[in-house]
Amino acid sequence: MIYISYTNRISSGLNNLYGCIHLESLQLQSNELIGRIINTISQLQQLSLLYLQNNHLSGTLPAELCSLTRLQRLNLSHNDLRGALPIEIGRLTRLESLLLTDNAIVGPVPLSISKLSLLRDFNVFRPFPSQGFLPSRAHDRHNFERVYVFGTNSNLINKSLN
Image 1 (spheres, rainbow, N blue to C red):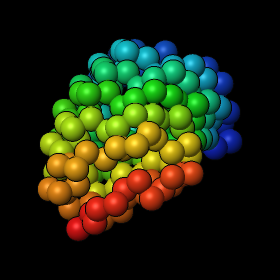
Image 2 (cartoon, rainbow, N blue to C red; image 1 turned 90 degrees about the vertical axis):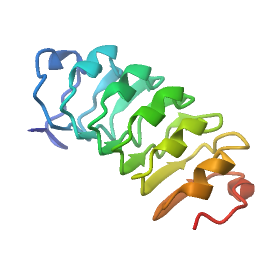
Image 3 (cartoon, helix red, strand yellow; image 1 turned 180 degrees about the vertical axis):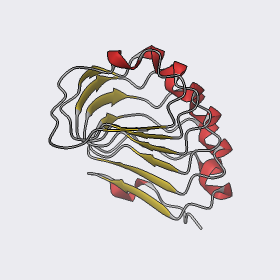
Image 4 (cartoon, helix red, strand yellow; image 1 turned 120 degrees about the horizontal axis):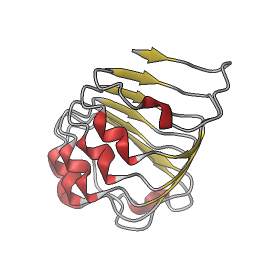
């Protein structure tokens, strides 16, 4: 496990993780990390927890992130990430928590999210994603405990999530 948080102020990117193939937990929240989430993150195949919230990560979510099939908790909130969720998000079948608050995530969630049967916490807000954010089949089958989607048009989700 690597846990470096808050007062350490690591200001480089994630390039220094090369060779950490047995890493199970990476918690680098609130460290002023900059740059993109690198494609080589896919080498961390044992990762079950990835907390990178409250940094300055930018760019889009790489599809390679979705190759971390042991991932259970992913928190990328409060960064500068933009774009749509990768279609491959459905490969994260062990994912229980997906937190993307305060990024510029746009577009509808890929229908593959319906494969995430363990997903309980899903949080996205500010700015609000485009209309049609949750595919209707995804929330018909899900056992979400908490879904937070806030923004200027928060009334776009009009079906019950139970």
